[in-house]
Figure 1 (spheres, rainbow, N blue to C red):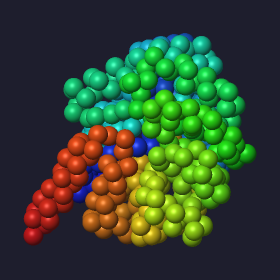
Figure 2: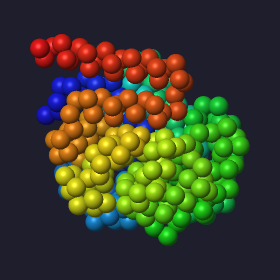
Figure 3: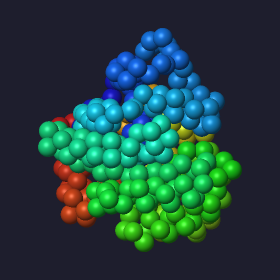
Figure 4: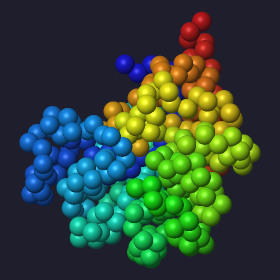
Length: 340
């Protein structure tokens, strides 16, 4: 059961892949809707397959599951389902990734993807009170030319997409491979973020900072192995969107008790807590907060600081960020008085 303080704590989620939020129940519903065969006979068998030896073991299963997303309605349903769950977890702001290349390969037009995710964002804001934004990601196992094509494809939606990212297989695909992609994205006015230091070494984090110049680093846990890099991340206040349950599920760390998040926080890094691909890794954002509270011994003040970091690291308007920070202060004060 999630601690009541966590359940009601205002927070932002900055590292969640929409295609990775596909719950098995919706997976099977969409497979039936679109007549897409699946390798599992039922929901329970699918869940039983969610045990991984690493990132490269996980990605093929993710892409196989995502193959059920074929129509605009599918993308709307997926995004709205995630935002409904996030709102229930106290998420006030969600910045969601969508890896459009996976679906383009399957013949799904870019308009089906973007128009319907953006419609779900607008409806969730009106109906649920959750603010959210879209970050389009490219996949690093593909070429930089393919990533640049994505930037051209999404140009008609440029004012409605807040950022550009890079994910998928990290090892063997260093950040320098995508230097022009990030330079072009920045020139077109996008905020930028890059997966680095998850499956790859600390050097990939440094290279990302030097060459890609992102606003945020996604994961970044490998940085803890390099004291000079830790100092740089602290001094430059580079946000790190950490995903604790994901790191355990993909064997980035051996256990939650061994996760470096507490050390990173105590080193002064701007770390945030996120869910990554929640159905596959054992939980949504509150489950991640609960895991670090339980296994790393984080107190309420530290949990509140992590929530503050999530808004400070967001690509939201500064006035909105200030309002959310005030809400966290009010929440902490309310809980303090209630516990007397």
